[in-house]
Image (cartoon, rainbow, N blue to C red; front, side, top):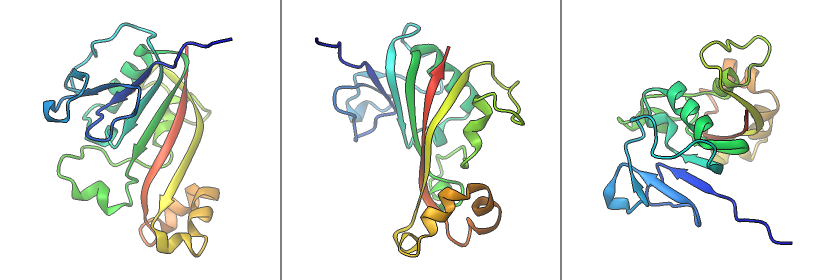
Length: 177
């Protein structure tokens, strides 16, 4: 039995395009399939189109994260996966690039889950967090600090993230419709 290929969207693809994905970027020089400003909503897609959406080093450049997440929800199929790669706010990379508008943490995306204790009224669009991981600098991995940061992320962010900063984090979410 043959299954149709996954329909993947690479938002803000830049030069590192996801093979087989529809690539969207506002910069013509990177030769995306579609030239579109990610700050301009809605995106040029119908509802319920994509099985997977990738945002690799993109979300931190967007002024309105809520609008971006809601737009991803709109164009994603029910059960689609959203993969976000972004610097953690403790990373110098988060603060060095003058085009970064957001500085996000391990728990920033919990606000889209409707989880108990989370402020869910910012958006009615819901996601389930499938997986998330912090990636610390190599010298901190050697001592097991990356494992500890991922095992106890709230404690790490509260007490240790500036002493042992993360480079970036990956958050994988499932669209709930």
